[in-house]
Length: 363
Image (spheres, rainbow, N blue to C red):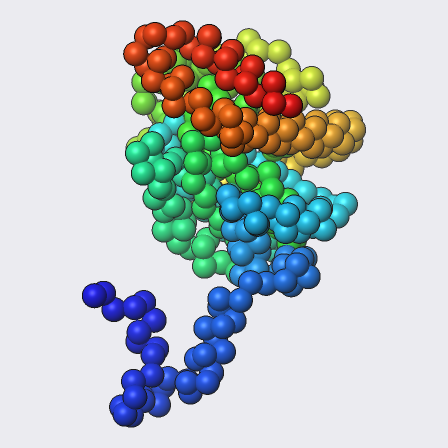
C-alpha cells in the first residue's frame, strides 16, 4: 500500500522524533487548520486584504462545480465587487509558439519592478478532450514572475469552454481586482474564431505574431483584426530583427485598410523581444494610452456596462443549460435520443425538439 502523503510528518510510537519536527499536538492543529473550511468572513476579509493564499482558495471555491459551494461563492463575489479605481484588463492571444507566456512574464516583471505595480495573470490551459485534465504549466513557464511578491498567477483549465478562457474567468478577475491587483492580464488558449469571449471581458486586446512563419497574410483574418488594439511581432532580436521589421510593415499596411474603432483608436503594429526586454515597455505605453483615451471619452464606462451585461447573459445561458441537463425527465430520455441520433433513426433537429418539449411540459 502506498505511503500516505503526510506520513513523513506522522508520529511513530516508541520512536524518538527528530528535533526538527513540531510536537504531535501542533501537527494535529496544523492538519485541522488545513482541512478546516474558511468562514464567509475569513474569505472576504482575506481577499480584500490581498492575502494571496486566501485569494487562491476563494478562486478554487468559485471554480468548484459542487452545488454546496455555489451559495457561498456567490456571497463572496457579491461582497468583493471591485471598488471604484484604476483597473486595466488586458487580453493576450497569439499563434502557437509565439511566446505568449514569455511576453506576459516580461510585461509582469516590468510592471512590478519598474512601475511598482501589482499584476495578476489568469492563464488558461486547454483541457484534454479525453481526460478533461490540464497541464497547468504556466507557473513553470513563468517561474520568475510566479515568485514575484507583486504578482499573482492563476492557471485554470479551459474545461472545454469556448472563447479561449475558463468558464469562471470573469469571477476570477473580480476577485483579483478586489485583492488589489489593478493590472489584470488574461492569457487565452490561442488565436481562433472564438476569441470574442475574451474580448468581451477586457479593455485592451493584444495579438502576438511571429515573423517568417508563413502566416503574415493568412493571419490577417478580419474577425480577429477588428478586435485587436495592438499587434506585437515577438522575437525581434538577433538576426531576426530585419524579418520582424518587414513583418511589422506588412501588417501595418494591411491594417491601414481597416476603419478605426468606434472609440477612434487606430490599431498599430510594434516589434518586441521577450528575451531581451526590448519593446516591452512600449507595449504597456500603448495600453495606458488606450486606457486614457477610453476614460477621457467616456467609452470606458460604457465598456464596463457592456461587460457586466455580457456576464449576466453568460450566467443565464449557463444556468439554463445546467437546468436542462439536470432535469429528471430530460435525463431519462436523453440516452435513447442520443442512440437514435447516432444510428440515424432520428434527426438531431427532431431529437432536440422532443427533449425541449419534455422540458417545457414539466414547467
